[in-house]
Length: 248
Image 1: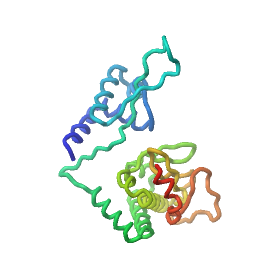
Image 2: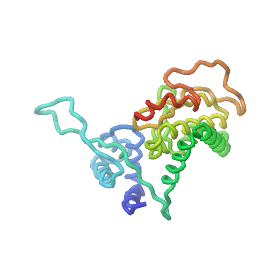
Image 3: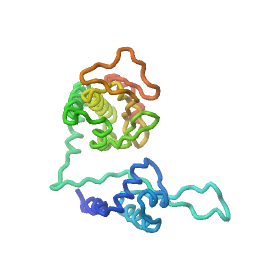
Image 4: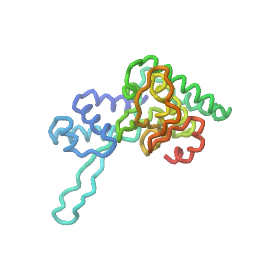
């Protein structure tokens, strides 16, 4: 943990800045100053001041939206904001779990123990479900930092909680992430086949296709056709997806 991390996150203690940050972060893309101000219920001038402070702290990035009209009378380019790609971590006292996770991932790769790692991850998802019995899966995923949002009936995950490690070991981490989500779904009485790989740049590689929840302990209906767009493959088939995942 650096002092810069602590100072940057301390900015979010201000309710206006926190609200503006949440507006930008939850958009999944570029947000204009006026749009952010309206969503946060503050003036455009005040929003601009706080948004620029968040940019200075490295929590947001800024740029300018390309004008459709060019030449005289086109006006000034509109300033836009997006969530910064970097991450901030605060731990008191300082801890470094990421390094140990990287070492353990390297051991799994060295031993060729990917299938065992997926089994453990699926069990971890089931244990997580037991502590959230009766809750919708999107609530559980939200608490774990996945930032779920709905799109065309599917549940997509805007954030990967394992992003740093996924960049280092994409195939292993994405396969374990999928297994964890499948174990979570099954433990909540939902269909684990809802979870599949559907990677997008800047998002989690896992997405959940539409589906009705099952009764606890019930098995998915045999022969059920998968929804288009999201494949319900098992973790063991992920090796064929390595090129797609590593390209993210």
